[in-house]
Length: 241
Image (cartoon, rainbow, N blue to C red):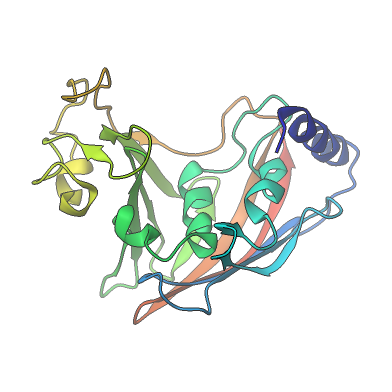
């Protein structure tokens, strides 16, 4: 999608917000994903206040190598404000993309989902050298804007996969060897050079809406994880700053 078109769409979003057009549950999400990546039932559905910027059970198209309904592009105006500042955590946006990606993507990005005895669900993956983590509450809810969303630079990618991961975080220098305990440990300092590039590792940072964004999303999404199937459903409200 061309930058000018994105700017126009984002402007429409902001004008709608400032004009009071949007109402309760401005953005609704329905997501189903088998974390093995092989199920044909994977899909992403979202609807919002912008006409035509919605998809119904969008999924990966093996013929074109993209999503059938171009959800990646259509979701952009809900992700950014008019100046390109984040209104939604990158962690959450990246997770949504798995449902419309090729079957190999969860392996490439080492997508892992764990549910502990208390009901807390932890979702982690590393994409293009950046690790992401989101953690639900004990009821399986993702809460915005103040939920647990984190990211950290731990490697890099040059051209196509595989990613190159710092030895500080991976036993074999690859995504499938990532040690998540080390990634999210404040005891492992960032700022170290990654061999083979001019990149350096980073420190753990909170991943959320930019504090200077014109709006942000508020609400909760319900997460369910059984077997290999991950489901996310709910609605979010756009809040003006």
